[in-house]
Image 1: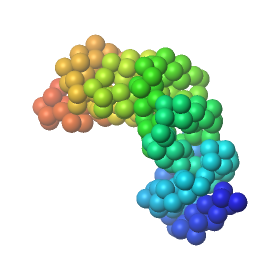
Image 2: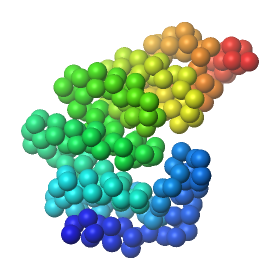
Image 3: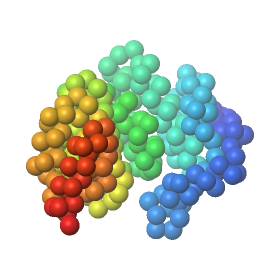
Image 4: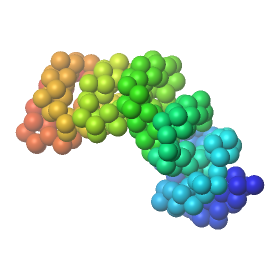
Length: 241
C-alpha cells in the first residue's frame, strides 16, 4: 500500500537526535501547542522529495490517510502531495476538488509548519482565482487557532498578486488573539503586505498601535530602516506600557 511505503521511506530517513530536537522546537510537551505530536527527525527537503516521488501514484484519499498519521513528517508529506496535486491539476474543477479536500481535512493541519508550507499554495491560490475571500474570512472567524493561521497565511498568494487589502483585514480581525503563534503570523503577513504597500502598512501600524502585540510589531517592521523601526517600537512601548 502506498501509504505504508511512504511511511517506511520517511522512517528510514529519520534521525532520533533530530526528532528529539524537533519535538522541543515544535512544543510537543504537556499543555504546549504541539502536545502529543511525534517526530521522525526527517528534514523538510527530504519530505518534499518523497512527496514528489510518490505524488503521481497517490490518490487524494490516500493522502488523507497520511494526514491521519500521528507522525508529523507523514502528515506533512500528505499535505505536500496535495500541493503537488493542486499545482499540477489540469482544470479549475480538479483544483477546486483538491482545495475542498484540504479544507475538509484541516483538523489534521495542527502545527505552524504544516500551515505555512501549504495554506497559501492551495487555499490562497484557490480563493484568489475564484475571488472567494469570504472563504478565508470564515476560517479567520473560527475558534480554532490553526484555522485562523491558515486564513492569514493564505493571503500570501493574494499579496504576491498585488492584492494586500485582505491581509490587512484578516490581521486586524485577529490582532489581539492571545497566542504568540498568531502574533507572529500576523506580523509576518503584515510585513509581506508592506513590501507591496508600505504606506498602507505604516498607516495600519499607526492606527492600531495601541492594540498591536509587541511580537507582531517587531515582525511587521523587520525590513524598515533602523530609524523607522526605533520610532515604531518607541510608539508601541508608549502605548502598550
